[in-house]
Length: 401
Image (cartoon, rainbow, N blue to C red):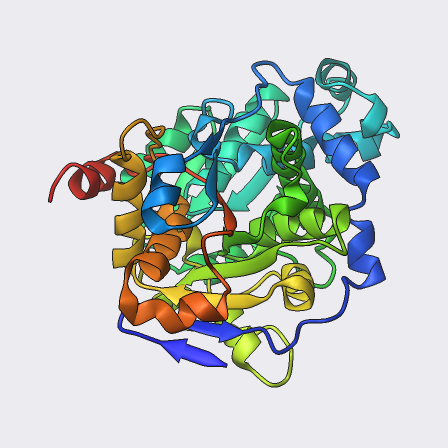
């Protein structure tokens, strides 16, 4: 069933399965989640990011609860991506040294890795992933080469260089830059640390995804007496889909019989998961063109096939949203109601709360609200994946009418 208005399109997932396939389920077992948070907890400066409950916003929108996990506070990186980058680098060295990462802490791994030849880690990023890889490579005393797609802001490139990495601007879009850098990595014996997968390049993308699951482990702990399975709706943003699939997969594995509704949100002109869900074949579909959106972290045209396998199996709906919805989300979080926490959210981080607000605050979206079964008993979780990673644009949107 497809529903549309001027700012948002929704489609139900016709490919949804009764359960997560066994092979994919194994990647997000409790054991894998414990390994991720065990390692991250040993990192210098580790601290669980805040889980904010916005009671005044929930009351205003007439729902039971709204929770926002604020990843702008992660490792001083202004985004969640460092979780995946450093876990992937740690997993790479753990394999080289035949160490069990679930029993190895950061300092021990760094000390052991120093006996190996230096490695150059290469990746393509719209900003946050590259900054996380640069930070992680620096902690491990390794080299990093980061490539940004055409149209990336200089502030994102400068933020990467702060961590000692080399940063290069490409004249190609994100997906085409990934293909070029993959060839360069193979030619120069670099390690490609990319969060999308293809045949022959699956191990490291999976490491990155498993690193993201620390977010879920923290949420479970922070909710305390309010079990995660009492959350009714989780809205997750998707670029290549690695983040959304990791979070959805981890939640589903914890509560396979009581999993909340999973709704995937994408920019209108970069909706590769929406188009994949729309296609009868059930195969991932690439979106071509300029991928024109201010949500730089979500401007991806080709789904991670592993992420698509997970999301097509356990997600419930896919939504396309205009940039105006993201801007609204930034303003809502940056200008909270009464004593709700103020959350600084960038373009890609704010799209889920923008969608939630749009659905619940306008009579024109009553059909979508009913379709998603959003009502006064609903308990909603969103994850703010980034802070003001483009400070100029953030100021322009949030501090001006």
